[in-house]
Each structure stands twice: as C-alpha cells, then as structure tokens.
Amino acid sequence: MTAAQIFAPAQLVGYLALVLGISAFLQKKDQRLRLLNATQSLAYAVHFFLLGNAPATASAAVSSARSFTALRYRSPILAVLFVGIIVGLGAHYAHGLGWLTIIASSISTLAMFLLTGVPLRIVLFTSTLMWLTNNYLCGSIGGTVLEFFIGAANLTTIFRMLSDRTKAREEATLREPAL
Image 1 (tube, helix red, strand yellow):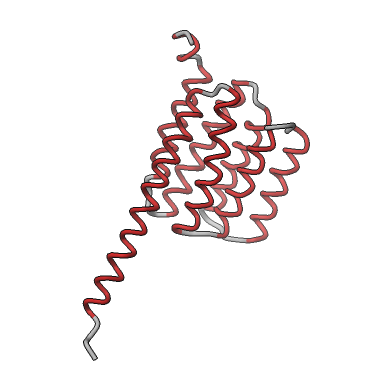
Image 2: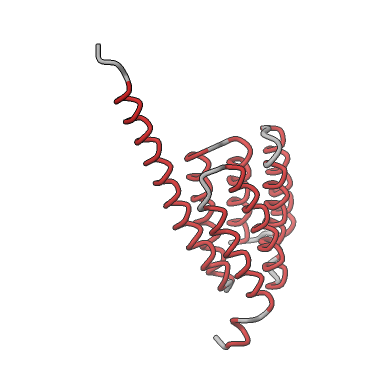
C-alpha cells in the first residue's frame, strides 16, 4: 500500500473514527459511550461513503442517528423502528457480506435502547467483531484498526466494570454487621 493510499481522504476520516471509537469504548458511563459512539458512527458513514461501500455507509449513518436518539430516549418502540430502518436499507443496498454490517447495526441498536452497563458492552462487542470482519474484507485500514482497538477497549472496560462491581460487593460485605 502506498503513502497516497494510506493518507487518502477516505482513510483520514477512518482514522478520525478510530480515535472517537476508542474514546467511546473506554467510557464507563453509558451516556458518554453513546455520545462518542454517535459521533464515531457519523465519521464512519463518511469514511464508507468515500470508500464506495453503500451498505456500510447506510448502516453507520443510521447507527449515528440511533445513538444520538438513545442519548435521550429508552424505548423498545424506537429500537424496533431503528432496526426496521436498518433492515430496510439492508434490503435495498446489501448483498452477500454486506448483510454483516446490517446485522451488526441491528443488534447494536437493540443494545443501545434496551441495555445498560456490562450487558450493553457485551452486545456491542459482538457487533464489533462483525464490523471488524466487514472492514478487513472491504479494505478499510482505519476501520479495521478501529474495530480491533474498539474491541480491546471494550473488553478492558468490561473487565474494569466487573472489577468495580466485585470491589463494591466486597466492601459492602465488610460493612455488614456480624450476626
């Protein structure tokens, strides 16, 4: 790969998405995760548009709108609405492996509206693995690196949250009066 390819406009936007995505998944607070994820998905949509990957562009754009909406609202109805939009776009744009991003965005959508804490991050990790596969196969340098590091950051945060939960339980046990 040449320097021109590495620093092409599409790749530069992918690198921006990388920074935003890693920042998102290092957050323990769900709202910060959703905000940074929304912004990262917007950059991702531009990245895939510039790469000519219509299913990934549509999926990332809807994911951005979904995450911005999920900042304010928790609703199974909104989750179903956004999944419907994603699947509808998939029916129009996706073929073959293009469905991978549609499935990934659909499960992320359900997670963003219906889950919190560790369960939210576990479902998002599954979605990350699907996006990682898509990005590698379509030649997205920044996207592949992004999803790899998002996965690592997300796993790190999951373990940090579980550790915090364990410490809190241990401290609560120490404070309980003996019977």
